[in-house]
Length: 248
Image 1 (cartoon, rainbow, N blue to C red):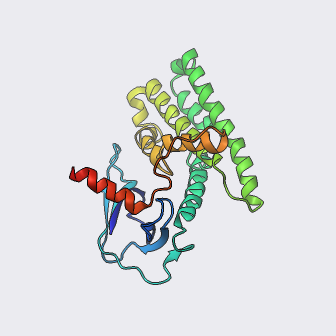
Image 2 (spheres, rainbow, N blue to C red):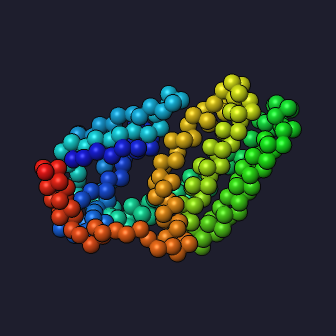
Image 3 (spheres, one colour):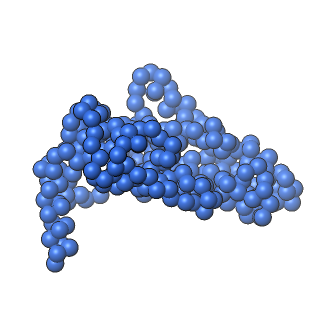
């Protein structure tokens, strides 16, 4: 039993991945197991979360006394945190390197800006677009490097988080630039209105920007991690302290 919020496309999924607590007497990142859950199982319900565009890419999933069949676990018992991290790494790479496949390309944005010759010749607009185009070009070559690792049988590293953050940042900046230059016409041109309204939600996909920046700082740049006083405390003790705090 439990709930999970911000689950992408849960309303279309046949199966879901569930990270569940299976041992409460170890620190919080241990004692977790990953399971495959049929989304039509008894006790599973999905509630859509509407975005400003009216679409519902994200959902809240509720599990009430859901019973899973033996053999539904993924990876070792109590070793689900590693499975979750691997899944997130691939998700971040998919988002970070999938921009061109989604239509987030500098040439496409440039073509849209040319619809307004006055804005296209504005030095400030050209400067903003140049920064966006540079980000997309850097992402393309970052993608080549990361794909080379995958083709050699390797796994994506924490730099995938940097690609994800940069992709979303560049796409949002492009949408804002189009909205500023085209005004109300941006809502009618080539689906740009949908881009402007949908993109902010993707900041949460694969981990929030704040989490990913911490990850890049610690794992890529080698910066000292934030203090974690509960890292070695058994999960059951943490919950007991929470209950005591609420009771007082």
